Length: 157
Length: 315
Image (cartoon, rainbow over all chains, first blue to last red; front, side):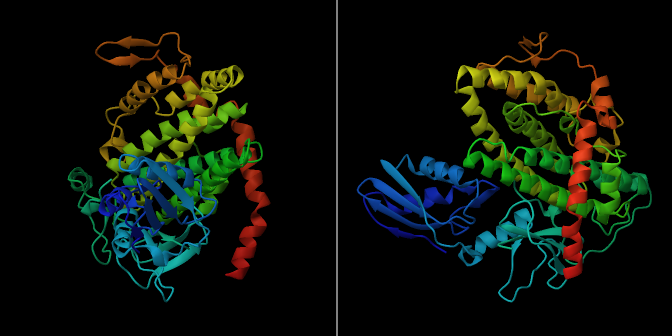
């Protein structure tokens, strides 16, 4: 999804471009905007407020993400307010190009609407089976592809 | 970390065969990636399997170390960090045991039995006792960084596809842990005199195990180098680590516990010669805390048997 950006004195494309460069701390190269974590950006004079949605409320990366957002916007905004919303994050928020990059670059997939999984390595749509409800993080479950015999991780469980 | 085409297989997997070891090694030298269905030479299969098993065991033993400190971590933020790190390391072990078991040499229960009976190995750094909270921070800052450097080097040129793909995520996550380590170190480095001294004492205990983690100088005929599992020699990685961490730690006002440490204008920081007998004994599960750690891991596995039974019954 695309964040709603309301214009102020700071150029909106500048803010969007800069936030696009903030990566998820566990996925270098995957931006928080693409993951749908940026809900809304508002500007007021020279200040900017960024509303974020955490993928998982107790995630220990939240402080780092907040610091990275501040650092990214500091050159163009006098003040940066970051707020974490209580809204629940779902995989529907992940942008299509980000889904592709998660699969291609990290072997991490998102379950289809019908609950099926496709293998990010060999492309099999029928031979990926769930193994465990969680893996290295609470926001990913673990599956295995019987076709090419690779581990598949599933974002959003 | 850009993806290369070789990290992915195109279409349905088809097992490949090679005429002999020369042909196989030429394939590896050309950047070839071995897949699970391939008819790889038995010596390669065994060597890669042992390497992944060692890695999996180390993640498991490391995760259990982190777990021990969840109740003792001061404050909610640090408890969260240790909970997340425990989940992460045990999760890594889980993925690695899947890949290792698939290689057909040993099942996961067999690997765990061997680990708990002291028949197989895990990294040297998990054979020592963490005495104070500062030790755990030294582990997060120094040991995780050494493990990160070593795993990244394996990832860079790893010839076994299923392992390389898991390593990519592990390396990304270890990079994230290092930020936790830095955050926690800063608290002690910039804290009271007592906190500063606590970390110095922990550094005195952990510097040498961290440096030894890279192992003795690589031999010229190391099969792990020849078969593109390791991409850099042990001494190269160790030297780079020393160049980075000596000035960082000194910058925070700490003393490196090595009286022979010196700076050479050309070679950079040089540490004293290492007596590798300690590492050899440790890797044979004869380290200062090996016995207790293995017993704790075995006990933890036995205590959770009911969970596995319940999951199997539900499946």
